[in-house]
Length: 232
Ligand SMILES: [Zn+2]
Image (cartoon, rainbow, N blue to C red; front, side, top):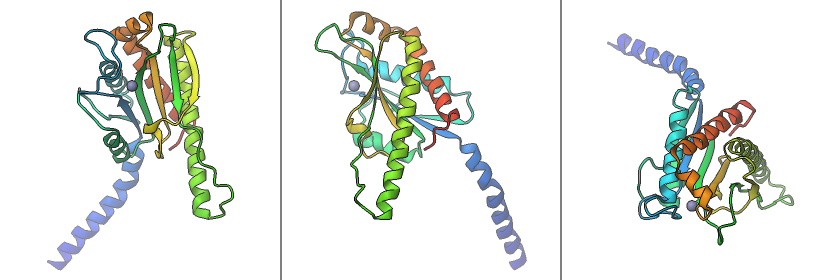
């Protein structure tokens, strides 16, 4: 009996030892897409029936679909239907996903009808602690620098790829203290894909073909990011 038990235990150990490196390799990269707003929180209005929450969900769903046949990139969404998800819940989903990359999707609104185009935000400034000689702090600074570099790399790639869908509509990369991006350890960007207040822009954002092109551009960006050295 003891011998049987022993061989079972050894069998399990060998199995775990054999499969662990495999599963780590097979895990691939995890991209979390955050379709902003949802439920009662509609976001900005694009028409009588279409809101920001609908556009962000449509694009996010299409990104997931576009990458469904890419084995080494797994896509998770912070919501996959029309529901309220708090900022804290979104962060929790991200943290629980072991994510390598995070993209939050929004639609902008301007004060007038003149503002048009897309913007890519990243969280730049980190509090410098150069005077601090604590090695733990230095390590934290290095991690933050790496996260920042990777966020900028992703922002550059996304800005370029979305520019193919919306030529000459790029409003640039913007370093801003975006609340959702704060305290994240994952390289992250926030894409304001267009303006609801721009008549032409909102027409495009409601167009399912354009939504598909934006999603494809994001899918291509993720592939480029992971193949050009972006790490988590
Ligand atoms: Zn928004």
